[in-house]
Image 1 (cartoon, rainbow, N blue to C red):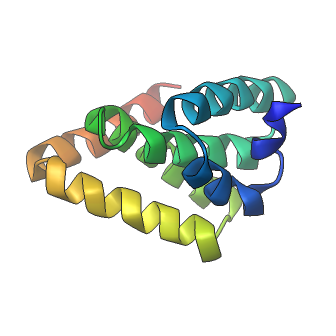
Image 2 (cartoon, rainbow, N blue to C red):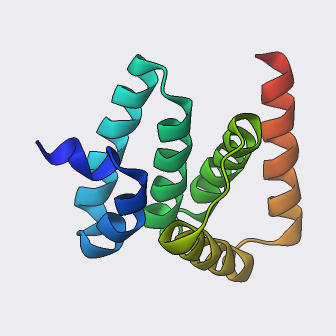
Length: 119
């Protein structure tokens, strides 16, 4: 089953990089829905992170929103990125820092915080 790319977080970053971005997006989105249905918060966070990575170049504001959601879940669950996951995160943040203005960045973070308070 192709959803296996999101089943093992240590393989997630590698799978995203070795896959066609559109195909990776579709598989990760499906994995996100599955993780949500299972209530697996750590996997949801990793799916957000990987989705941000594959959307950052074409949809930077979406990617930024996904990163803020992942960061919140990392904090809530005590996840610490390392290895290929940290490298993927750093590359995504670097790309977004070059394409998203400081005002947009701040607005996205504030919006996520407001939405969190409302939920």
